[in-house]
Length: 333
Image (cartoon, rainbow, N blue to C red):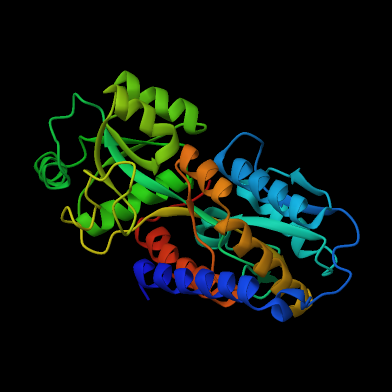
């Protein structure tokens, strides 16, 4: 199933949910988990404050807390590529009061980068909803003599091992995104890893590095100012904020898609009725105009859908990124 097909299914799910809650009072009054939540909840973010994961988690926590008139605390537990926070939730009571805010790293390529995890990313968790996505973008420093994906591929093939790229660290989303691009385009690019998105971005602005593929939010201001050149977007469709940029697939590297997605999961044995209640309310949150405005201002796209769809996507992502990690021979020393 492609991302475009999945998004259509999600749109139908949102519409159906809105019609049911608005047009059928009896349905709206049906509470799958009466009495829940009866105390404050925790949303564990397995990274330090300040990044996209933390930002989106705090939007979710605020909106859900307001809807249920119950506090939802964001608990940052960074370390070991996010595995410390994920493991904490895997071992927490399955009562719906402790959730993990998963993303493509911890539940996509993390299982391949950390083969000896103390938890199983599928068996030990109950997906709630694929909440949001930050699209990635391929950018270059203006000094690199390319303006299209085809020109970049041609340059890399003409000068194998001479064009470098920046990442925010070995095993990071940007690292995996470029390595995936390299595999599909059949080119060789030299990785230069930095400690975080900030230093990586500085390296691109200064011309120390030539290109990267990472989330739109930190790159967009520099593209607008001419300090970087936007080449293509890594999502399945063009972005409203930059409709002139083609997708990487459109531009010649067929099948390429790389986004950073986010969504809450609960411990595996959490009652189904609690998962349904959380999913229903968070789909409703995503339909609210003010949520859309906040997301648009940060370059975030709303997702949504059912717990089953989220689970299916997680399994597909684990399989896809396992191939990238294996074929690119990525190791965390």
